[in-house]
Image (cartoon, rainbow, N blue to C red; front, side):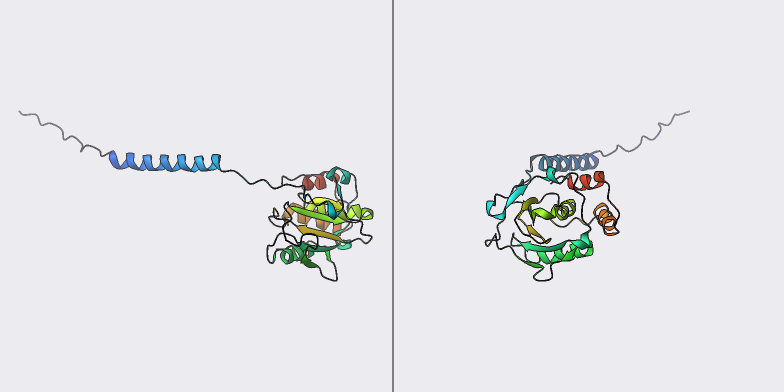
Length: 198
């Protein structure tokens, strides 16, 4: 009786799998190298515009009771050269319940004729209307606060070169709706909105 040798399985071909693993590994190394070596261009909160007025610290707003958005007439100024951005932000603020300044609610910033405000931007308001600034600072936490000596309750929002867009997310919208209804927003909520990273 002869014994038959069992059939051996065909040798596996590991080369295609090895190539796939190598390609994925190289792609991962390249991706992580890009992530770790990429530098983020920093934008300053300080605008270096002494002609705008007296700079106010955000800490000065702590404890200030915020005003209802409907009581705050806002003008949005283009100080960065981004076409249409001031109009878009103005419309977004109106959707959050803010009032637009009746005459010229949008325009170019007269203090930045070169449209080169090199920061996130500025909130310019009168010293008697710090409550208006407190409300808007919750929406624009990265903008520099400036008392510019105006006597009315309007606030100018000057958009600088570092401005990336209006945050009208759920927490911001909810806080503005609560203020609009006449209810107070707890200080921790406003502080968390104002304390977002720039």
